[in-house]
Image (cartoon, rainbow, N blue to C red; front, side, top):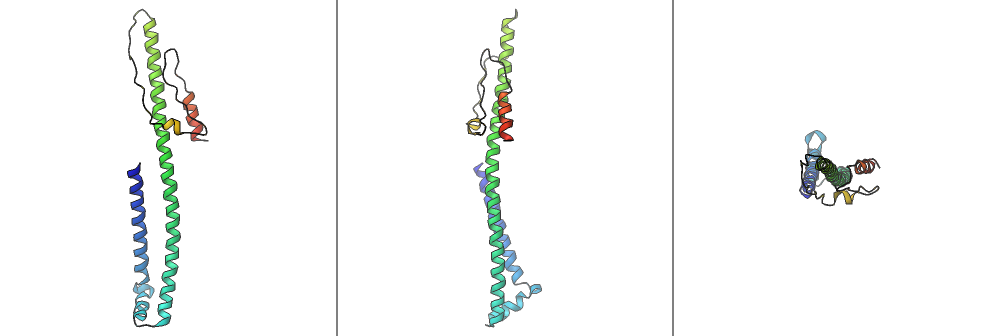
Length: 165
């Protein structure tokens, strides 16, 4: 996650530098009269210098506005990605819990029959690294597999409510 954020930040910074260089090149390009304005400014001609500075100031303001917009977007997207990882981690844990609960019931039913065979054996709980606990409004509880407890879709309903809440 942090590596991904750094990559986004580097891409954003590179984009800002490219925009600034592009604007500077546009300001001094012959097609926009920039070469003449630059030459006049170098010779100390007042109106050309004033016009060049005013044009550059306008471009800087436009670029600052773009940078602010892009910074807001990067922050929003970073937050969305973080929340998405939490939801994905919780979904994986809920799915594992449901599968393990199913296997536990199958072993219990098999043990109650005359064959008394165990197909899956003891299950190792999965650590969701707190993903489900981090989800709130509504909360998404985990139902760990336990003897005598049938698998349920309840936690999945809570996750769907969280996704669309």
